[in-house]
Image (cartoon, rainbow, N blue to C red; front, side, top):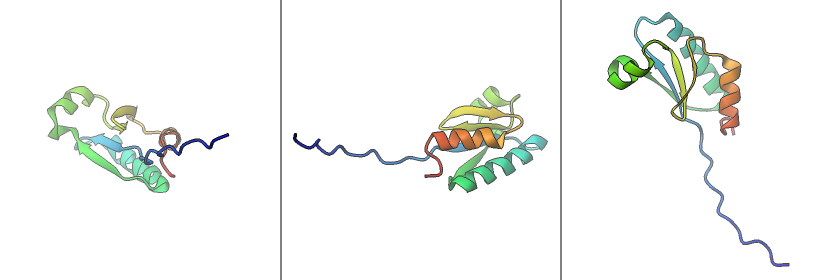
Length: 96
């Protein structure tokens, strides 16, 4: 039997994590802590976006802030659950 031809292995990609916030949001402080902790544990970078700087984000997420987007998909809002975020990021290849 001939060996299988080697297939290129797609490069490992890490999920992108964004935290959508706005000024004066008390829930955003807690969310920032959770996202920083979980992302740090998994070795992932994350960024924070103020929805006041983007009219489309403000219109879409204005009443749900804070919101965590993973690969552009809303995954949690208001009270960010660290266990749920960790599970989502791990399932998408985070922490490898």
